Amino acid sequence: MKNSSLAFLLLIVTTSLFGQKKTTCTIKTGLGNIIIELYPSQAPITVANFLSYVDAHTYDSGNFFRAVTLLNQPQNLVKIEVIQGGTRDSTRDFDSIPIETTIQTRLRHKNGTLSMARRSPGSATSSFFICIHDQPSLDYGGKRNPDGQGFAAFGKVISGMDVVKRIQMLHPDQGQYFKPPVTIYAIRRIP
Image (cartoon, rainbow, N blue to C red; front, side, top):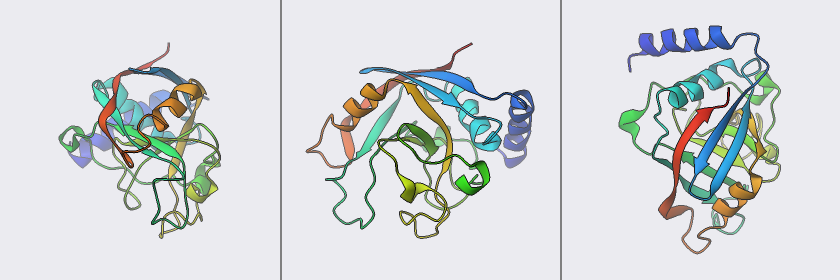
C-alpha cells in the first residue's frame, strides 16, 4: 500500500475513533478466544493500524507463531515473556507506522498488554504481541531494545489470559517459533 493511501486510511480510521475511549475485539484461535480492549484515545495511530488489518480481514488464517519464555532466550540479558502473532505474510502488510511510545501514550507493558512488534522505531506493520506478566523492559527507556524507544502498547486482554498462557507453553521444547503455529481464525470487532 502506498504511503499516501495508508495515511488517508489512518486519517479516516483515526477520525472515526476520535473521542472513543476503547474498542473491543475477539481473537478467535484454535485454543479458544481472547477478548482484547483497544485504546484509540491514547494510541490513535497504533489502534488505527491494528484495526485496518482487522477490518481488511488480513489476520484471518494468520497465527501465533512465537512464544518467548524465561527459558528459551538464553542469549538475552533482559528476559521477557510474550506471545507474538500476525499474518507472517509480509506481502499482506500495509506500510509501517511511526512508534507511539509508552512515554507518549502512558500505556505500560503490564500483564495482558497488547503491543506492536517491530525491529526498529517506525517499522511496525501487522505483527503484535501479548505480554505475560509485567514487562517494564518493553516500555520507553527499557533495556530490551538497544534504541530505548520500547514498543507501542495499545490495548490489553480483558478475557482469555488462560488461552494466552496455553499458547505460550504449547511447545516449550521447540524454541521460540512454533511448528505448527497456532491458527488465528479471525479477529473481529465486538459491536
